[in-house]
Image (cartoon, rainbow, N blue to C red; front, side, top):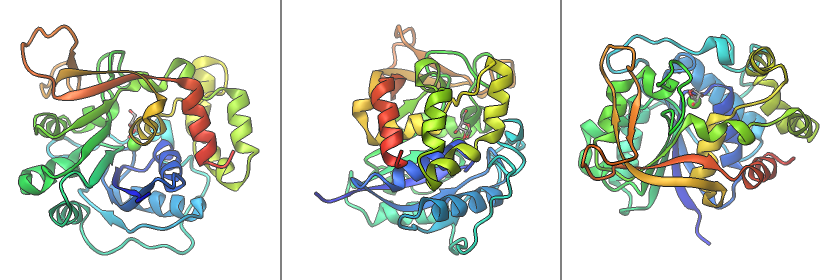
Length: 312
Ligand code: RIB
Ligand code: CA
């Protein structure tokens, strides 16, 4: 079967790295390239982390293009407490061979969509939506040819991870998220809630992954900071993997347990709910749905997908 074409937009921290390695090893898909934005770390550091991940994955090596180096309006907050100063657990990971490809990730995305058949390319967004917002504003007709934009973003139907109501990717650039959510393009939105509870990797699963080989060890070790944080938060080592959850929902839909179409509105106010995505479950707005919201995965199928694509 012909491989389905995807573009991955990433702010490559340690959970992005696991998701990227998974996507590289799902033979049903071809990653055309990576466009990189700022979020977990600076965009330049996210490029370094993406290149490192490509080398560690030992698979094919799509181009990595730098995109926007800042959110549209707000200041960069980073997520060093979760992923480390370098975004990859601060264990000294650097690419030995690969370099960034000259070119701008936003313009490359526009070019790819312009030259594609309608519905040929899916975009998977694992970071703030800055690059996609700029692409949509710059070339709406080209971007309208996208098969779907799958987003790791929002608290879904649950709680936030940077405030009671906001999830990091949306909160870091709510203006960009508003543009994407109001674009009318087909959206799959995978909330933070989809990676919690039984979707978290427990101590035994983490050990299985780490002991499975070099890629599994990399996928666990680059999440060192998150593991330490979770040991402190939950008393046990566990991994809440947001980007792998979104990647699985996008590439392996049999992993999805709960997903429904809702009208979603991004809060760009400067108040306490800034960055919230209001999911209108009961239709109070009277507006048509603009996204499919995935709030829960089938944990066994999801975890088998992780193990299979990471060689565990
Ligand atoms: O809130 C989790 C999301 O924010 C993940 O994509 C993580 O990598 C960070 O980008
Ligand atoms: Ca991310």
